[in-house]
Amino acid sequence: MASRSSFNFNILVVLLVIAATACGRTAVRASEKEFLADQVMVFDNDPHATESDDHIMTNREGASGGHGAGGGGCGCN
Image (spheres, rainbow, N blue to C red):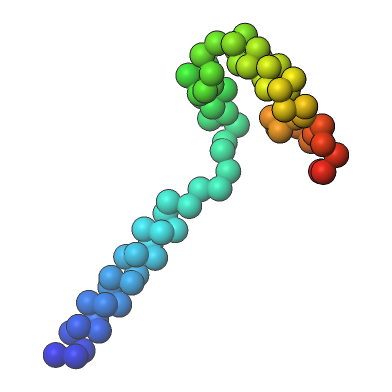
């Protein structure tokens, strides 16, 4: 009986390893990058309103940056 349960466990482990390695793509192919640059992937619908909000936040907080570029207004970077 112990042999049968260890065999089932080994099969389960092998299936889990196969499933885990089959899903692990780390790179995006060049042919797929056009879909990532689609307008649907942009979070803000109105870029002018976003720019205005960023300008207001910069004036209110006294700092700028933090949107993908280095640097800031406080000098703590």
